[in-house]
Structures are given as structure tokens and as C-alpha cells.
Image 1 (cartoon, one colour):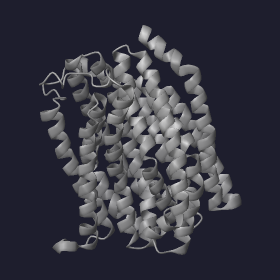
Image 2 (image 1 turned 30 degrees about the vertical axis):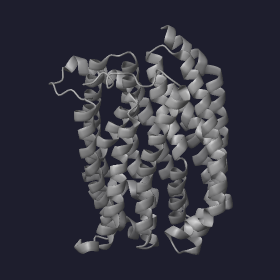
Image 3 (image 1 turned 135 degrees about the vertical axis):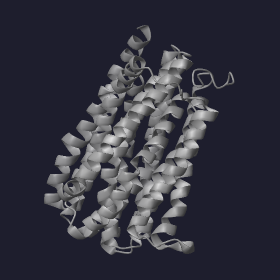
Image 4 (image 1 turned 90 degrees about the horizontal axis):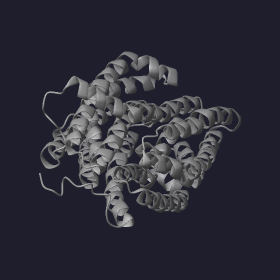
Length: 454
């Protein structure tokens, strides 16, 4: 291994250049990752409104399982970044390996739970028998391949901790490109492939994740040397699991709040009709794509804060936070204007149904105005996680989703229909964003200083 590989990449040089070097590849990688559900939505939308509605039910449930993997990755990344900053490279490899083993064990359990609860869960969400038939086709394939999904997701988290954001983005790009190619081929039976219809979208995801897993294995094992293949010592593995779960478990639980809340809101929206469900699904997928820059900033601020904490550079942490929050807020306002202008056009690209288009446009005109507040939540939560303080992240999302969004969406839907759900989403972003910024200004400087002195 070269000396350059064994260097904490984020503790020296210009803060702005360091953040930019992390953020641009991460934006590209997240564009690739977030494009996959959009690509699925686009091609499935060509099959019919019921199939498009089925995808709306599927996405929050699939994200429940992905969120647990992401949460464990956040825990692993937070530990690794501090170890890298301190130059403890043997511990980096061991901790990363033990983190991957933990992820595999958890994913196997989740797969079994998902298969057993399939009909019950979607029934509770309000899926009709006709839509349930499509959901069953997709989820039985997806659950059976969830381990393939877990490996590249865990690998990208480890690479981000090291500052290797280009490598992490490469894994996500491979998955997205493979999915873009396989979706139309398997859904519509192009180039002699079998015409699998709705199930073809699931098989395309399997193929895409398999390609990403192979690339990720090469990068982690050969190029970055971030895995240790010695037989694990139980005591050491338990120590590493505890350190990972200290941040990873609260992060996983917090991440679960988002898809569970999304599932609850889909259940609320399901009472308004299949076309409303379909339009809502289009809108939230476009929203996820539009929030790529704040997501990228949230993802990179953790490794930056973690490595500089490990190296004792508290001033660089504060400088990075000021710059990151400024970019996140400015981007949020800019993208809101673009989405409002193109809202109806965007809806028409997914389904030629006037009600689907109007629902999509209503959401994309109103909710993005509050993206800057949501961006503050994401960046502040990522920074606290990096210092080993996952509680603010959990508090923010409990307030935003459980205390505000779900009850307001329920009441709003009963009084104002779908517009009530839209205003509930916007109001929850604003209130929680203000709370997150206050929390950051009041508590973050003291926590960073105490952690450094300790």
C-alpha cells in the first residue's frame, strides 16, 4: 500500500477545496443512485396507472430496509473517519470488516421478516387486491436479493469515511447505468429478452446491484485495502460492533422514521384514489432527485468533521460547517424556482393522465419552497453524527415526521384533500429546519470543543 493511501485526506489544505473535492463526486454518485427509482417510475409508468401506484407503495417499504443498511453505514463511517484521522490503519481495516459482517447478519434477518410480512404490511398501507398482485411480483424478487443490495451500500459508506468519494460514486454509477439498461430490456422484452412486465423492474434492480457489488468488492479489497480477511476475534468484533452501533443503531432507527412515515402518508393518500397515489409517487421521487446536493453535503460533512476531529482540528470543523450550510441553503432556494416552473412538464413525462400531472405539479410547486430548511436539517444531523452524537438526528426526524408531517397530513387530507398533505410536508420542513439551526448554534460548538479536549 502506498503512503498516499494511508493518509487522512481531509485534515490539510484548503477547507473549501477539500469540501468541493468530496461534494462533486458525491453529487454525481447520488444522482446515479436517486435516478434508479426515477428510471423505474418512468418505465413502469408506461405499463399503466395501477403499476405506477404499485411502485408508490413499494418505494417506502424498500426504503425501510435500505434505511437500516444506511444507518449501519453511518455508524461505521463515523468510527472509521475518526480512526483514519488518528492514523490507526489496522483498526480501520478490522472495524470496516466487522461492520460489513454486522450488516450481512442484520440484512438476513430483515429479508426473512419481509417475506413473512409481505401481504400484511401492504394490506395495512391500503393497497387494493389489483395493486397487491403487482406488489407481490416485485417484492418477492427484491426480498430474495436484498443481500446483493446491502454490500455496495455498505462499501460506499466505508469509502466516504476515507475521503474516497470518487470511488464511492463509481459504485453507485455502475448500479445506475446497469439499471437504466436492464429496465426497458426486461420490462418490455427488448433484444430478444423475455418480456417480464412489472417484475422486470425488480430483476433489473437485482442485476444492477450485482454489478455494483462486484465493482465495490474490487475497490475495497484490491485498490483501497480496507478489509481484513483474518478469522475475526470475537472480543475485538464485539468492541467494534458496540462502537459502530453507538451511532449506527440510533441512525438506523432514525432512518427508519422516514420510510415508515412515508408508508403512513401513502396510506393516507391511498384514500384519495389511485391517480393521486401515482402522482404523489412521481413527486416524491423527483423531490429526492432535487435534494441531491443537500444529501451530498450531508454525506460528506460527516467524514470531514470526523477526520478533523480525530486530528484535533476544531477550527476546520467550524469553517466547513459555515461553508456547507451556506451552499445548502442557497441551493434549496434556487432549485425551488426551477421545479415550480417545470412542475406540469415533469408530471407529464411519467404518465399521460391529467390527474396524475396535477397532483405531481401541486407538490412540486409548493414543497420545494421549503427545501432550504430541510437542507439545514440534513447537514446539521450529519455533523452531529460525526462527533458521536446521534441524538439530534433522531430528535429532528421525530419532530419533522412523527409529530408534524403524519398528523398534519392526516388532518389536511380530511379537510383539503391532497393539498392538505402538500402543506403538511412544507410546514414540517420549516418548523424542523428552524429547530435544527437553533440546536446547531447553541450546542454544536460546545460539543466539538468538549470532544476535542476529551
